[in-house]
Amino acid sequence: MKIFSGSSNKLLAEKIAKELKLDLFPLGIHIFPDNEKRVRVVDKVVDEDTVVVQSASPKPDENYMELFFIIDALKRSGAKSVTAVIPYLGYQRQDHVFRDGEAVSLEVIIKTLEAVGMDKLITLDLHSVKIPKLFSVPVAHLSALPIFARKVKELFPRLFNDAILVSPDMGGIRRIQILSELLNIPYVSIVKDRDLTTGDIKSTEIESKFSDWKKGIKKAIIVDDMISTGRTIVAAIELLTRNGIRENFVFATHPVFSNDFKNILQDSSAQKIFVTDTIEVEKEKMFDKLGVLTISKVIADELRILVTSN
Ligand code: R5P
Image (cartoon, rainbow, N blue to C red; front, side, top):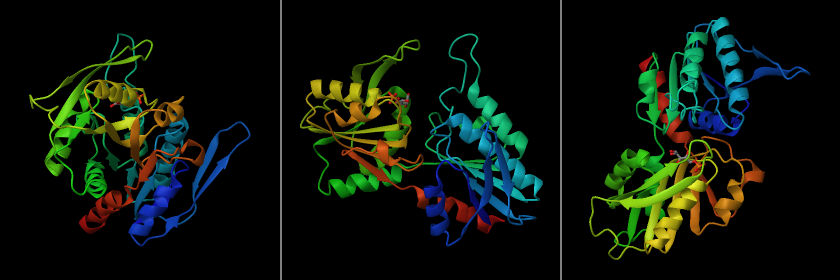
């Protein structure tokens, strides 16, 4: 198996290769003065199973174009298979038509990835569990939840009777149920409204099947698939605080981090915010409350299965 990396998250690609005790193979990526790119596979890949790691953030369009070219180049160079590791699958939130006249951007991305020759996709914590069904090729949908569970246990070795797990919107209910089983902590879910035109977020109420969930509860462990502007998290924290929660710990798989996220999150009353390295967090995006956990082993373990099954 030969592993390659696009430009978006080389650090993660290196960590995955290291886990597998493999070298990362170089690609020739040349940027022309007008910003077009030329991608070239330098090493021989004839009859090889190949893997390319490329996250779709930041700069989703650029990163996707580069990935399309890499897959095309690998296939034209004779690779037996191309597995794309797209730790954060950009455009996943546009997976159906929300309002008349919209494009289904995710479908366009899927059609292109398959047209250029992707044989398998490895990705993490998709926004909707229905997304893998939109692909014709096999999809390994992995999760950072076991890593979050481990971190929670490490932070609070003797919790758990004063903590509640929180999904900041109803879409995250499946995730929070899985974590609830892993940690044996009850959960609640927040009802969130987002204005599709302005993007404004309102967290309106807390729903729970545990009627007395507030009893003795001081800590919230909020879990989401991604943080973009940070407004979902802050709206959740404000609602929880109004309901008697004193400490908030946040876990989100994908640090999409956009707009004024840094000030919003650093100034929030969260104690700590953990994300993973599905998207590289550059130095200028770091802030004191942020912790980054690596998902390289989760991906490497999946790639090991690929090696043994071929
Ligand atoms: C949306 O439903 C997702 O699960 C996230 O909650 C959302 O994308 C986060 O976006 P933001 O940080 O901009 O509120």
